[in-house]
Amino acid sequence: MKIVLMGYMASGKSTVGRLLASQLGARFVDLDDYIEASEKKSIKNIFSEKGEIYFRKLEHQMLNEVLESDESIVLSTGGGTPCYANNIQIILEKSDGSVYLGMTIPQLVDRISKEKEHRPLVKNIQDQELPEFIGKHLFERIPFYAQAKYKVDGSGTAEEVVAEIRRLL
Ligand code: S3P
Image (cartoon, rainbow, N blue to C red; front, side):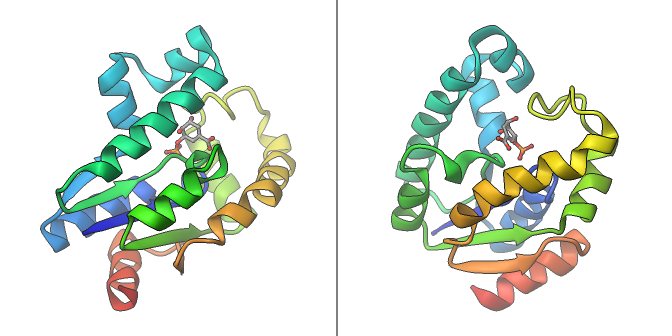
């Protein structure tokens, strides 16, 4: 069984994924952590030393690798994962359930402004520019996120979001 969580940065994919995996008795994999472990480098350093395209290629490879495994896995993807290459098709074909954790722009601004430093795409964006930046990004990305089998409101507590996902699965 493979469950894939997707959604924008700071939508709670990792926290929710970890809790969901523990309740389902599945292995939890965070794609960013998986990439960092395989490269022995932080995402921030991969972006600054090798660039975003290199990161997107790795992300594509590692997504395939994780979803090829025979184990039961809950996978939290990075915010951009479903939006590059044919990643969304891979997710839809190789998972038993894909879930989009939806959040509004103000909710995302609130969370992201508190934790920008380790996120290479937003770390240089001024707080007052975040709504415009996130809004534009969502405009491009929602068509991909919207292909997930299920959509849940990501703004509740992790317990609430997990309960909602389990009700849908
Ligand atoms: C990215 C989101 C990040 C990480 C990378 C790029 C994106 O993951 O993969 O910084 O393109 O939205 P999180 O969504 O876990 O922050």
